[in-house]
Image (cartoon, rainbow, N blue to C red):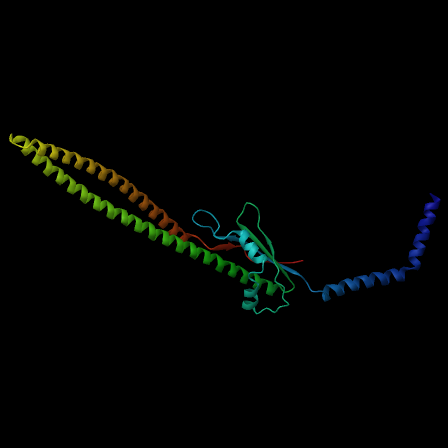
Length: 258
C-alpha cells in the first residue's frame, strides 16, 4: 500500500515538471484540429427517393434496375455536364440503391458544393422523367395501334356477318320457292317423278347449306364479340395511362453534411 502511494506521488511530480510540454502539446493538437476544419473542404450528401410510374397493370414503366444500370454506366453524364455547364473536373458518380420488393430507386450524390449537388440531382431527376415519358409515349402508341387493328378486325367481322345475313335471307327465299314448286308437282298427278326427286334433293342440299351458313354466322358473331371486348379493354388501358398515371414520384431533395 505504501509503495503504491509513493508511485502515485512520483507520477504527479513527473506530470507537474512536464506541465508546460503537456499544455503546449494539447494546444497544438487543438489548433491543428481547428485549422483542418477550416482548411479541408466540407462534404455534403444530396439524395432523393424516386418511385417510377406504373402502367395499367401495376408494372413499372421503366424498371428501377434498368435506371440503375443506366446511371452506373454514365448514361446521363454528358447531358448533365451540358445542361449544367459543368467542367470535366466535376465528379458525377452516384450511389444507387434499389430496395428489394419495391419499385423505388434511391439516388445519392456526394459533393463539397451542396448547391451544385442540388442542381445535379434535380437535373438527373428530370432526365430520368424524360426517359420514362418516352417509354410511356411508346406504350401509348402501341396501344393506339392495337386499338386500331382490333377495330378493323371488328368491322371486318361485322361486314362478313352482314354478308352472311344476306345469304341466309336469300337461301330462305330459294328454299321457299323450291318447296312451293315441289308441292305443285306433287298435286299434279302427271308430274315427272324424276323432276320431283330432283327438287327434293335440291331442297335437302339447300337446307344443309343453310345450316352451314348459320354455323359460320354463329362463329363470326363470337369473333365480333371477342374483338369488341378487346377494343374496350385496350381503350380502357389507354385512357388509364393517359389520365391517371404520373411518370414518376420523388421525395424532396435531402441535403446533409458528413
